[in-house]
Length: 75
Image (cartoon, rainbow, N blue to C red):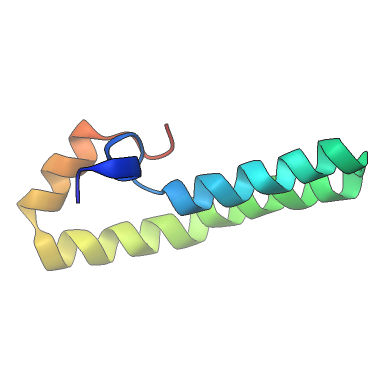
């Protein structure tokens, strides 16, 4: 998939959730929620994304590697 939101970043759902959490923290004036957003990004970046991308490389090989080289991870 290289159309729609996936042409700008490989993980638009994770990005959307992070922005939603950070926006909610700012709107509510809740620093704890901002910390939760930062923790979410850290966990996703270090645990989930590498695991998912390894599975995609294994399954789709060179096609996914080419896609990953052309499209940034976040934005």
